[in-house]
Image 1 (spheres, one colour):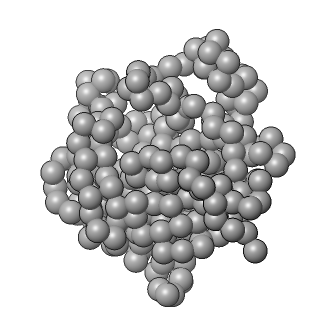
Image 2 (image 1 turned 90 degrees about the vertical axis):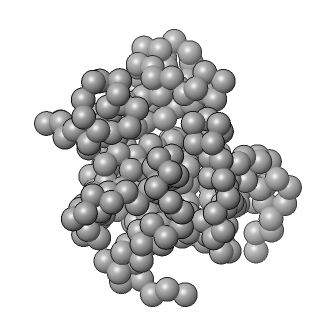
Length: 244
């Protein structure tokens, strides 16, 4: 049995706890929602449990389809057991459409559909507001090697292909998603090492175009829990998972 121990990271939306296994941690999802580098924040009751369930489902799906993630199993309503990792402070962002700040940056309409899949790299640094960087910058800063970056891009594209198809089966369009990576403490393997949920993806209803993700909070479109619950229920339906 793995025991939960002291908190080793206390963020706004997630907390990480050490365990009796040196290669395992427990992620706890909170009800807090933040945007624009903590300029905007709120608390939505039940949101943490929804994030936990959605992320667990998606990460488990990736694990089962050959894309390694840190997720091991769910251990509570808002907690999951995960492999311990050394954080790589980079975000690989995959865009199937151009939306949000990238649309503004490129001067295109929000929701512009490019002929290709666009992959961006960002430096995960709150003080610098997570700036866009290129591969040469990442290597110059000692964050990763070119070979490691190639592997991360390949993993991100494969994860996008798998999840785009899964969401489509649920009547949801995966517009974009942010993926973070880390080196597993047990074997040094680079794996997906953070949540994948409506907090880290843009998800639009395929028929209505309704936003089912964190943009509801960013753009003052209403409580996020209802839309997150819709995402969870649709995913559970297509994967034939019974609600506990």
